[in-house]
Image (tube, rainbow, N blue to C red; front, side, top):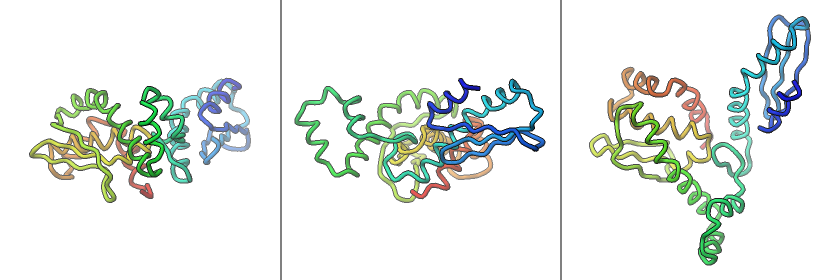
Length: 216
């Protein structure tokens, strides 16, 4: 159990386990902790295995809760330290360019970082998802959008993605990319369209739900 506690702690989650008068192992996620209540008679190995099986779920829930409460900028669902990001990803920039970037307004700099992150990841994302969907985009464009996460021109096969997607866990960007690629099969939101989304990305509803409840 100690190793499990450390594993959760590495993701910023406190693991709290209590044995009490309950019939089943129950899990409740708060902003800071995964609270587990288990029957008094359950053996430690069964309890440990049950908790370990919930690690990915707990991480997703934790990130979603942090996103709702975060007073700071996030990148892929986690805290974004702008200075550290620039140092890691653009340490070879000429000094004058680096200084000019730092003079941008905070929002302009964040937008630049989001665009850079999405562009760097897009080749591997297209290689992953286009074969699963069975369609190819002719171009990917990034834009700040206030009312939608993405759009698809079904005639030119050009897809536009909201740069703010980079503030959410990567799965959200992947879902929107799959969603727009599927519009190249179905230029609507029919049952056939949603089946094509699910066939390509079986867990799409989780990421769809995360974006849907966003305060954007």
